Image 1 (cartoon, rainbow, N blue to C red):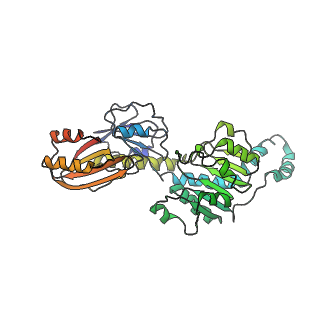
Image 2 (image 1 turned 135 degrees about the horizontal axis):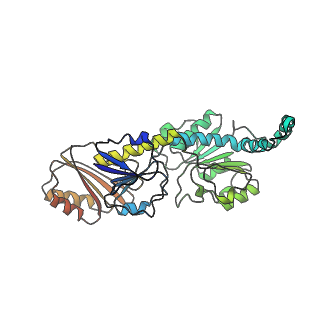
Image 3 (image 1 turned 90 degrees about the vertical axis):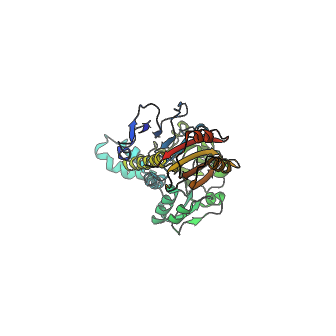
Length: 390
């Protein structure tokens, strides 16, 4: 019986994918095998020695201590693309409200309450204050062509925009889905200098933090409109405020507003609604649950942020799963040890990612406790699991 702890409210549509005969699920549970989480901060969490995996029902993993998990051999997974349509729809809405001053116009119209018969005339007189351009025929630059960026680019094409994308590490899967009419930017600076609208779809890390700063704003057209539904730290707020004041940025729409931006007229703050649809919550939960099941039951890893993706169809009598530091001769040490214990390997898969590697080893024998202890004692190995064929 596997034990699953939920740290947030997880969609029951997803949780139903756990077999009740094989899984115990609760928010308060001792010694879980896996944790399902959405936004709960886990940085101060004391991990039980039984914990094997953490699945984030969403894309961002800033609330999970990745390095700590890696040291303990805990696989951290997320659900990229599960909420892509939800975020994409909000970005398309942001494109429109960044141009047409609908939000400001609604707020102003509400101030006319109580004016009685004067309202129609006041509306006609005041509407000129909220004029804005159409998006058709304008240039949209999409930075980051992952699951969300591709959908945004494709839909913007359908709306009649000229779209340029920039992503130096676009995946093959994303490239297949991207409309052939989306142009490729040769560089980030080229995209920034030619776009009327810019939409950010990249993760926040050391390389992307403050990627839109004073130098980058200086490259942009006057009156550019920027959409940030990725992460707040991608834009340097002080430099953004200066760019707004200088007329470079006409509108900034963000799903991650900070206090120092809330009082600025040209900023449209959205209260982190990107994935706030029942469909997105269901999709994220379903994906997270299926990935946890695949890992706990078969040792397969998919959409991990710290370990390599590694999947192999079961063969043999027993499956050995080994996580180790990505250093030379680890595979040699593992196979030599198994051979010395007279264990025959039926099939094996080794993958690496950064500082970590993962091995799926199917054997024809039963793994003895002695052999298991010897394997765990090999220097550089941080996690070992043994699954008997059901």
